[in-house]
Image 1 (cartoon, rainbow, N blue to C red):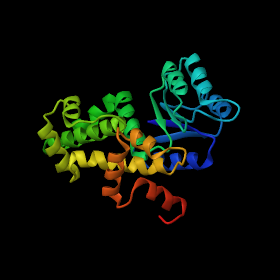
Image 2 (cartoon, rainbow, N blue to C red):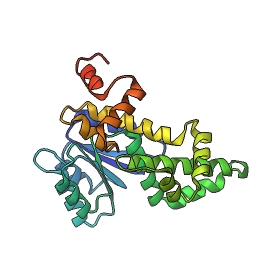
Image 3 (tube, rainbow, N blue to C red):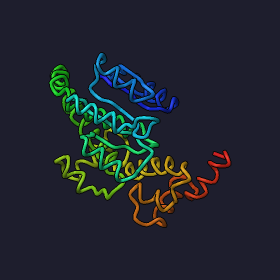
Image 4 (cartoon, one colour):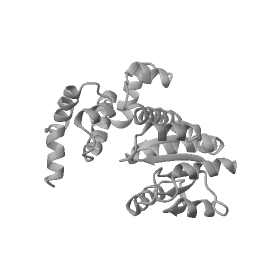
Length: 252
């Protein structure tokens, strides 16, 4: 799958390029720091997916998307934005953006979205690869795919209510079988993994002082900040506020 990166921050461009080029089946065909360069290159470069920032100097990522849609280019677009402003997200949806992810973006979340797109764009390729597998490996491959879908579900819904029943229903499995399958392939308890994923996201959000602890709690799926703080301390031995203070003091 061919990818283009558009972001005005050098560190993010470099990080995304390194992450994506290391993935099997992904090829980064262009990396650009502004919208003008990206639009000009689109006449020559091939791309299945564009990963772009939304707020950039001179011309925004939304304008990039508008012009792509005006050309009727069938390109999937993922926005990575440091802005949770509803109007941005609303405009992005209107322009047919595939996914709107907030920075700091968890690499696992981005890769899950990209793998999902890859399966949508190249179903025949995946089917052909599956047919090459030996019959003895079939059950294991199906199990891995279902576990991957469970992980993708968590990556998409971690900010809201996640129940075992809902997740199992989405995958057309019984709750007990889903738990057994997840444990077999990952060695982890499914709902414990949900908590672990939320705590990892919380650590990323806590590095941004503009978010209050209560805001972070809500962003990772906890309605009550007190319960979130308790879960965070259980996971890391310190409260969210202590974690933030130590990070700012470069103690961790």
